[in-house]
Length: 248
Image 1 (cartoon, rainbow, N blue to C red):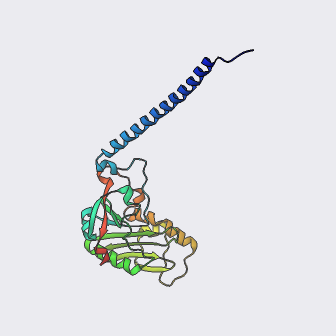
Image 2 (cartoon, rainbow, N blue to C red):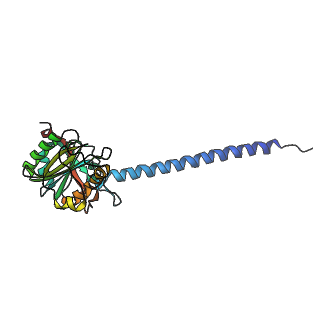
Image 3 (cartoon, one colour):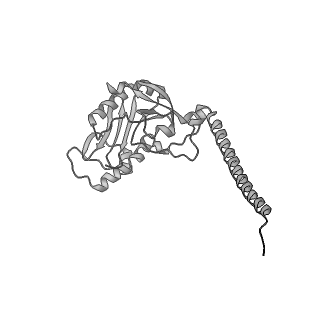
């Protein structure tokens, strides 16, 4: 008859326990090592200057805002003063175009400054307020353009103003709510179709075509924000803030 040696049994049990604690210790060491690496990476990121943190990655493609303004031949500071922006702070182009701020003023790119944000008027809600806002801004800044394309309703609008005077504007919000000035050559060339007040001839295809071609018109008149290529750190930083002027 074979019998189990109590000494060998105890030794084997202790070896199993030791192996268990060794595996646990190794696991804890690996966890601690990964935690240290993460903390180190975070410290290195935080040590970057604000400009470096704001600079978008090369793979970033800006999203197109719901509506935006393009202002020609002015500085971002001039736009900031015209809007009466307070509590202004640096803001990346990446964050600014998401539309989460009341106003975002882009750096100057190819002679244009882009303005977007929750503070911009919406012609679908109040076309008169849109008109008053744009004319007041144009009196201060000169040449101003406005673009609007709401993807769910397919409402759309575009406008050009010089020194407070509307040279061309069109807005559709279930019907034509703003039509002013002579149709421009870029509008004709890209194939948008506009209608007069009370004219109910717009088809679903016309509405969809106009909506989809707002960015094309913006690119022909000035800039399509989603297609802007940033060439330097300086071009990636804009201004975000709130305006007291817009509430007057």
